[in-house]
Image (cartoon, rainbow, N blue to C red; front, side):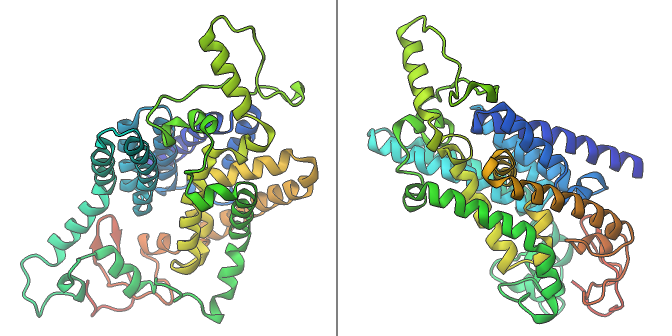
Length: 400
């Protein structure tokens, strides 16, 4: 069983890296930058969770794979992968944000062109499909714990207007909530998460300074050329597939020039060349904006609501982190920051391996409860089974 779990996790890690490379090629349009981003992902600071028996690698595979299929035009396949990411981890429900972004822009274009906005119905149904695993878990918990009991026997969450087992466990037993973790005694955990949060803030600010018009307009001020290049998320039309930069020895040329064979080729070549201008290519392209919004939302949740030390793991499957790190490593002006990022990844891989293998909480606390080791400060009901989780602690009286 242990061998099977380790094999599945590591295989999922490998395929997640492959899908990240494919997504990066589509978004960055630069194979070298895409390869660097994939290598950084393979040695990310939370990689210990991708190599051990844990669901993080499966979540990364399904999330990044879902993005790849979405950008490739297979929206329904992408929705299926996003739903599977929700089966692996509850935060997979946040991947519905990509569908919401796509639906918002396509509905606006349909309205502007006076078309029937069927995209709203399609987007709504796709979001429901992504949320189904999370809803199914809540229904499973309600049926096993609340169903068939009197009001006096029910736990408080069973009597609420919205019966959310997940929220109750997070809040009641783990103390998760808005600003609940802002305590002086938690300062070491904030320090533990400070490198990844600093990288996130720098990546967002860097993009925001370069493309403020996208933040102000939620992407609606994207140029027509960029919209055609990123049509899978912005437009109802098919995306123009520009040539991919394959070598850094081409100077400032981002595409290989070739003699067009038809009028259509001339148009495609011009659009590709203009959309890959230095100020709008790579990490600063409009294609990256939806990922920046997604990363911003997740980072805000990690800092203000969650146990902040989980941010290293929680944000590890976000592609913009690796695209930004890849651009820093390549840039001569920021070479020192590139070395610092590499050192940070190496240090956390070593630290995480030592701490997690000795049952110390490194960026996450749930692993200890799963294997039955009591955690100081967490009040789990002993012997209570929730899905795959068996809670174990000194408190034998409290029940879910």
